[in-house]
Length: 298
Length: 298
Image (cartoon, rainbow over the protein chains, first blue to last red):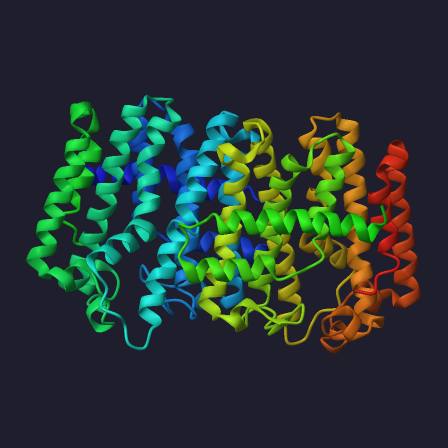
């Protein structure tokens, strides 16, 4: 299967699953449910669900079990976008060619829809029909909460906004940029990659391998994002580009230049590929994801 | 022990526990951690933690175990206040005589501090050192997420804001007001009361009894709140009063009058007391909480 086909496979599965879960939630006030559906079903690559399903498949975990985790993780990713887009945060009116949730509804509906998605993600993991054993469900809740919370994604967003909202931005170091990336985008990608061996009850060695892979892939994803912003075409990318430079935002590209950033990307890709060596051709789709980071057009 | 002393006992325990948990979270960016501490340690009756500890005590569950649940529940209650106070929501600048989090920091910090507290609450319940078995922790996560989420507290806040933000508020029915209360404040109070038999592995009969108690107590709490707004003294209450009438907000008081609301309160108190009959004097503090709803000055 090509990488595009694997991504498409995951996208269809997780979108069906999310749509079904939300449509069944008839006890949610209608306007709130609609805003949650808009937030979750408004498109996107579904890259994190793809990683969950592929990591699970590598360790013999079936799609049905993995989908509970994939749907919860995607709900949390989508809540973070809804809150990030708010006027008080990044103030973005468009995402994926559509009005953002606060623009389509209003700010308070967007705040509540985000809160609702964050909360329901943990409900999906923990409720009796999750398909996960209590011990595994509990581990998923703990790891996802850590990855998404103040020492993870929310912490990264805080550091990012603190730098951007300052009148005279401090010149950040490479270490600062790396920490920001690890928290803001890295933590959820790392979580996604670790789910396979965790769900499959695999050895510490497998967990370590997928953790190294996930950390490298997350960094590669961020660098490729920065490169896309610096060199991409807005129509292809699907959102405004050259925003980082206009905002005076420090990225690996601004700090090391295009060639420097591409060199770090290549090193990072090599580290990710190396971590998957023990799994040979069975890890083909996860290896394709590494290659993709060097070729992104959107 | 008097009711005030029992409340005070719970307050000291949960505030120490929350302070200790947050102080130990050195991996959280400093400004975010400070805003979380401001949100959680800025006072309050700690009524929900009191209910958790008393319900737990009634079923032989020790304070240390109950405190994990009490701290998580209080973190979620506090996140909801931080988000409710935002300019796009209730636009409140003061709470408990102090500037609200968005006023003391800024809107984006308040949004992120709320998100962080909501997320970390589930982490505390699910992490290996929670003191709860995986099965019990999992049940707590599922029940708390349901109570706090879009079919619970967040849903109630949505219904409330939808009514208030309308230019010409529709005249709501008693049923509408009751549903709003059940979701917005009732769901977390119900959860708090159910934790004792759930943590203690008690019978379905015990769970039912504490559920009936919790639902009645939640309703009594809301009616007493409405009465306080209609008749209280701002200095004693610690916040502005007569806000409901000024906002044209429908409450049981506006729909049934003071005497009507007091009659429903008395019936509701009787239902709560009745549910605790099987436990006799051992439930004294939970019975005191019922009496308190008829005597609130703040």
